[in-house]
Length: 226
Image 1 (cartoon, rainbow, N blue to C red):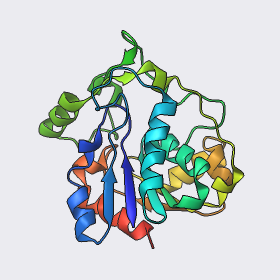
Image 2: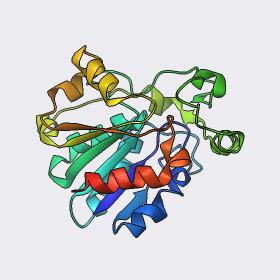
Image 3: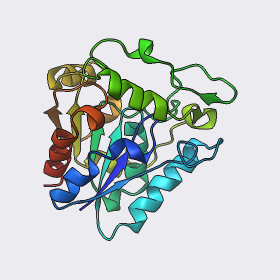
Image 4: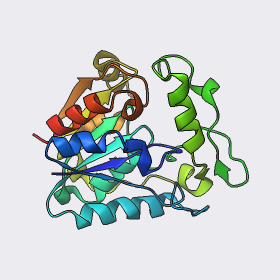
């Protein structure tokens, strides 16, 4: 099965470099995406541009796909599932929950000159970055791409309720399945509260398992195709 890999803020397709060969070895076709304005050399892009890029990959796949969205891109994966419910076999959400209709995509950090630069590690102290050594931190920070304001402040539009029937795997890295379940039950994940088939997978890592636990993450994604 094609597994579309959509990284979160500041990351391009190379973030999945260590996951791709593991998925290849497990018999799948990983497709790491470099999103418009987030590694393709463009300095401007919108959320609609990024969604169009994901949908192009979904449409190019010979069959149904597994959409794997990391962090903020959990929303991007969910948007693609909403737009192509007949082409998506399952959605894997890695360290993030999808935003709801009418909310902004990822308006979390300050904008500078029309883009949101990587804010530094101070914003991620604690469980999110605890498993990153200095080399991994340098790798992530040096490759970080400022995300255009048109992406982060884009408004999420969801229109097809068939998305709620698509199976979802919530991959829990810096938090536990019990925490994720509680957050959803208390209203922090209303989209997932309406999903009919949700399972949770614990992954002992920080917020960037594609860097620190690529083999384990690949196995989780491969198992999600079953």
